[in-house]
Length: 442
Image (cartoon, rainbow, N blue to C red; front, side):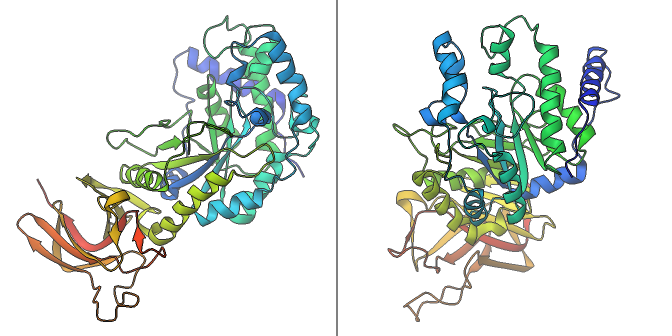
């Protein structure tokens, strides 16, 4: 049976919260559940999905409405939905790729700024049910997440260009009279009633735009275990912080230059760049939310899938240093980043120097100085993904990992013994696990 929070309750909670804020009272301020926040920090990698009916045009999602002529808006709002028919949409395929890559949670654009709803909503006709496709995309997405054990995340824009247009004001992100704000809050609350009442427990909500700060308290009331990311925690977009940030945080990035599908003139990041980005974010205590933009048909573009598969191979080998970890007191040095196990018994050193053109050849031994670490009587080291016993076709080669303490730090000597590509060239970082080591006090 579908559970539904009454619209009157939605409006009451929203207006109560706004009133409390205007009185500058924090008595009713609610926050993410501490236990769930700690769990969120363990996940490490999420998949963001930007997809709406204007993916047919290959345009920036939603924003082409700002500054558009009335003729453009009329065709965008009325004609474009009539040709949106993603017959190849299969969320199980999305989940299979995500799970292979080590993705623990997904965030899907239920409604972007344009106001087009990807679920069966009673609040507006501007939704997926009034397209040739005519099926609830959000319901299928949520069910697929649960089948594959991936946490369910929803993106929701409190700003709504269709609502603005219907209200008779010029479509915009900033400025305007604000006369529509009260009605828009009530409208958003009713949509959140549907999303949080009709699809069971939701793990993550990402608010994007004005009004998200007001709605977060509402979500904490109707589903206290749901984590509010943007709207409550830091979510830097297309950038990395210079230093660690307190508490859980999340950095969201595109694979190319655009969030939604861009059919031509796109410039994609390399798999190596994405892997290094993931490493640095995890070393600084955050999660990486990495975006894909499905084609109008519903499939993930060929180029984006290939990049995710390179990330999948690397994470398949090195996931131990990425998931269920915590940042170290020293995040890194030179071309090295560190993470540690939750217990602190193991430190993971990500050797970023030997990547790209400076890649580490198969079977080659290298010595690396870790200036921040020192050994203890029970120190052990190994390379993630390999057994340190054999190099293929080279029985005379001893790949055992070694270390020695020096005045300058801990010198490790390791071999890249695992063969991951046919040409034996591996362009991505090697990860060394160091058990029972200590950070040097400086």
